[in-house]
Image (tube, rainbow, N blue to C red; front, side, top):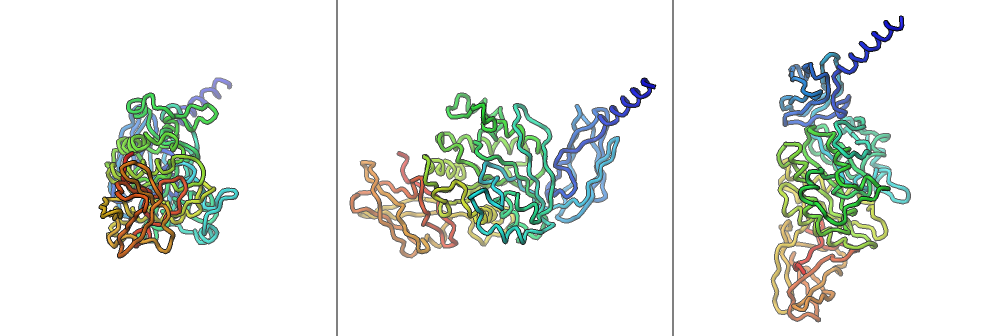
Length: 457
């Protein structure tokens, strides 16, 4: 009798081990990316083949070393549909939508939920939560985990947007997705993978760290905070999502790297390129948030410059500026709705055909001098610049002696002029080049300019 029981148990174990298991992202209520080949993948018995049926068509693939992957045909937005995965067992996923899927990652400002943190509110959160019920917006939060080697699965559940789910979801990601859904009228899937206080190197593959940044000073090896170690969050919270098909990435991070800002442009650029290489979906859109001003700490302006340089040097990237919405004593600005919407403007203009809107704040282009007055020119300001009544007290000018003096500034007919009576022959201008600044320079669409400097001293 014992032998019979053992045999039955062994057969049951073999049966379980042979079952097809899709990647964690493949669940009821999920959103698949429209108008691109759709990756479907997971694990199964290495001896078997897998069939996937979607919208009346069946696809098949072989299992190799316990892993399988296939691509569904491109699909227009719509649903709900069933997605059927069949090996020895059959899995039927229901209420599957096709629309736009975005991966949303970074540190605490991406992680911060709509309900806010203790003592740290999100402006407009209560009404946003109240009015959040929308079956066309689906949310997936990747569970926090560190790993020394790349993982193939993660924890998380697809949930429909409603007050009970939205209040605990990333405010930046939600407001981004909400604006897309309102304008595109298609389902939106938002996948958040974020962890407060983490540097960019934690989110970068190990082969990139080893080959491009070996010996870089500043990388964190504090054993009490393993989430800050290089590559551990890429391994545990990004790699498990590969190669799920999505439209692009939004990213909110940088504060954790400001003390070694000198390498951030290279590090962040390499991280973006590595994700694009790993996914093999081309140079997908990658839009990120420039860190906001803060009244304490150092190197804010330098890190903001490193982020600006990333946007200017890496193709198909864009930067949402927050120089006007920082909070002097809080690293988590309450204006997350503006942040999410500024990111959405990039996507709407660059990826979804809304060509008649402004999507970036002014970016310094060039300067000319006449006597002691400097006139500055900007990209992304077709109708000139404006201050919307805010005091312009964040400008400095210097002469050949490299000594900066506080400058006066005025805007006339959209043109910005700056000067100081202490500098008769100015050669350099800086704007917002401090840790704390209340941004007062915009284009006429009220999108703020980044802090900048015309010198490289």
